[in-house]
Amino acid sequence: MQQKRLTHIEEIELTRSLANHERGTKEYRKILDRIVTHNLGLVSRLVSKFPVRSSSCSYDDLYQEGIAGLIHAIEKFDPSMGYRLSTYSYNWINAYIRRYYQNHGRTVRVPV
Image 1 (tube, rainbow, N blue to C red):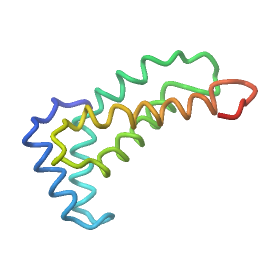
Image 2 (image 1 turned 90 degrees about the horizontal axis):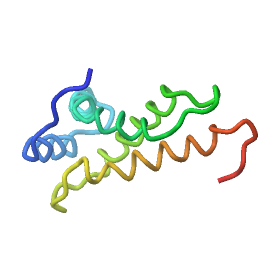
Image 3 (image 1 turned 90 degrees about the vertical axis):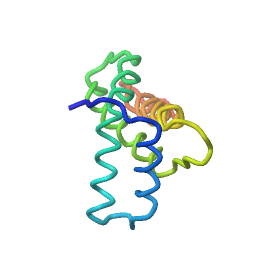
Image 4 (image 1 turned 45 degrees about the horizontal axis):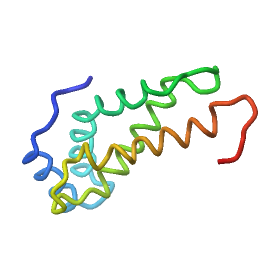
């Protein structure tokens, strides 16, 4: 269900309207869902970089963690800094995926 990327102006408008709504309301979730669905390509690209070696760490698990990182990045994004959302969210998505991979990617867990 990946959709075309948002323009920079659309990203700014959506993130500002997201900041104006209270977290947990129907409008907040609707705006958040729209932003997330337009940025799923970035998540899938980052997940594909991780080799899935064991059965304890699947592609779907990494993808879900990447989406959690994307949601975290969207909630913390400040459009006044001048960056694109994809540039800002890249590190958050990568951090969430990497943390999950390090905790669940091996048979014997090695602390991070």
